Image 1: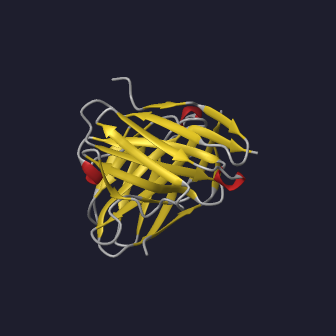
Image 2: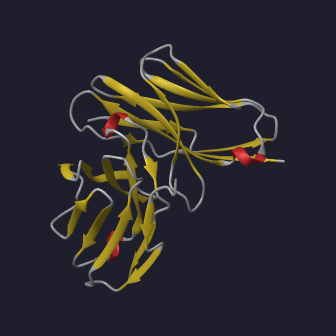
Length: 111
Length: 114
């Protein structure tokens, strides 16, 4: 069974204080790893897809990286508007074809 | 692009009542997903349609839950009879081309069953 574990559960940063969120996964053949951002009262919003170890994607202050066992979402010089819950999800080549989500990291960036 | 539209935004009902949640996917998207989100279990896939045909309904909790997609622009998720443990936020999402395309989520329906 596919499993996704995200850490930490919650993270509080000062504006400008860079950090990383972790997503560890166990899957029988990774077809894709996805990062989403979710604001309170809203649905998740797609950020990145990573397909193979060593791949990196960037968007503004966010950079996602992938290894064979985990993915990191690096946040550089965060701003208060980066406050949200960040969700990681995996899709496998076998078994269920849809995404398996982690429980998320709740990020709060204080001014 | 209006995004995925869900209705109602909030639903409060009594145990035993029928509940119907509605979803309009993004025009041109051929896949539609229903997810449920709770604090305890996070986001769980309930059912996935491709070209209006159910592909994976293994996440549907039990016979009380049913989903339909009569056409490419409309889907419903029905719970009959509802129970307090069904209380959650239900999200509908659509994608351009199956499970390999990014999912676009609606803003969800918060269901409370008393």
